[in-house]
Length: 437
Image (cartoon, rainbow, N blue to C red):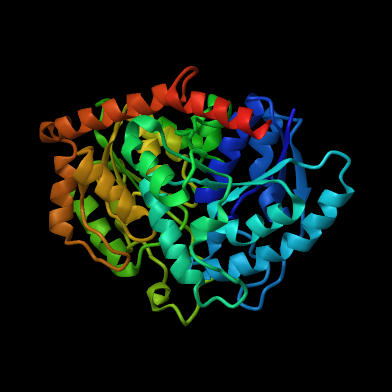
């Protein structure tokens, strides 16, 4: 069977979906080698346990003058460090050429994160193999990010970017989406952007091994054991009565935002679980946004809401929380992975888009599909706590049932797409077939 090299982008919102894709490709019979750096290797353990045949290629993380020493994952850095991460990892080009030349059965293709096409496309061309870009986003968000990446790299001297970033993708694109969600945009990308039909929407990705709890344990420690979180949810006797608050792996709220959200939660009276991330190690004086103490929970808040609210510091078992019967709504930054997890769980999304693809996702889910509610938007926006409390209470009421029902229907479509014989499963079969010919 065909051998493929996979190069993930080292950020949870990219790396974990890439591993989910690897799970699906391994189930379809592909032979895979995954390039990874030492500190990210443990994140592959659930996948490697399920597929012992998957090989790893471990390279030391390259040093870079703009990157704090010892950091190998964007989870610990603000988004402004993306060019430096790309610059560092592009130095893998020559070692990879040597690895290919010495391998007894080298890969016939590279699947890499869409961020990396500026150096993996030349690598694939040099080796005479296929280069595929994997985007953990939907089609709308992917197009937006291609444009944004061009702007970010336009004056980035390490790369010689001629024309559009998308021109680096000459053979194929894999998307974490499904045909029933955005068939029109998928056709637009084929006809008007990449100029070929090699675009595969293969999402959503179900948990590796179909265990949402283990899938949520991938990226760090937690202040509360997962079993205790689920025990607390089990004690909530009313279905759809809990709000989950989480902003992904990259977003940290400022102090003002934390206080506004805490006030809203305290005054609303709703039951809730609030996932609060650890401080970023890469914050520095150049980034005023991160100088606000990186989001401190107000003094005494946890005591005042004891019994009806949990604050989980560190990594929360998000998929298991969202899929619990007690959870009815989800205040989210609307990153695509989080949004899909919410839709698959049938909860109402309360959108607070902040950066990157969040705004495209919110437009799609709120304005076009009507399955979410826009709460506020902006990385530095401080919501009005009174209005936010009103939204939280409203998300538990019958007035939200129509949007929640629409969200549940979309979640069912997504789940069916991923099942055997669904549109995404068929797309995966076609991808594997074309890779092998």
